[in-house]
Amino acid sequence: MAASLHPDIHDRGLVELRDTADRVVAVSGTPADYAAVAGTVLAEAAIAPADFTLGPGDVSGRRIACAGKTAFALADGTVASLCLLDDDQGGRLLLRVDDTTTGAVTLGAPVAMGEISYESRDPG
Image (cartoon, rainbow, N blue to C red; front, side, top):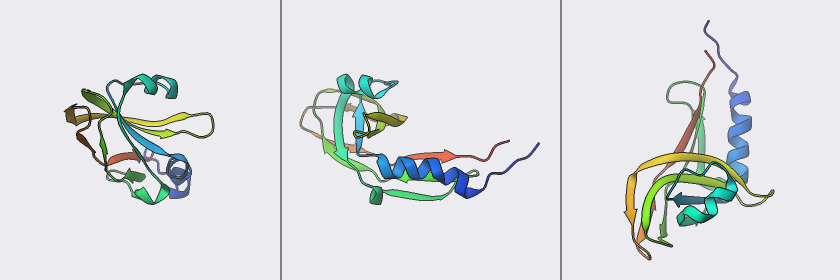
C-alpha cells in the first residue's frame, strides 16, 4: 500500500534537529548516546540554525542538511562518524552518520567535516 505524509509532519522533527543542534563532532567510534561521545571526539565545531537547509527529500518526504565545517583535530585518530549534538537540555546525541571519507586525522591538523544530511521518507 502506497502512503504519503504531509511535509509539516516530516518537518516537525527536522526543525527540532535544526533548532537544537549546537555542535558537530567527528568521532573515532559509533557512540550510541551523548555520554559515549565524550571519549571519542577528534574534532568539533559550533553550529547554528543558519547552517541547516530544509527541503524536499531526494527520494521522498523531506530532507535536512547541515553545512560542512572545518575544525582542528583535538587528537590523533581515524574518524568513523559525524554527530550532531545538543549540549543544552541535558545533552543529546541528535544524529550520528557514518563517515567514510575523512579517514585518519593528526592532532592540530585541519579536519574537513562534510555536509551531514538526513531524509525523512514517506511511509510505504
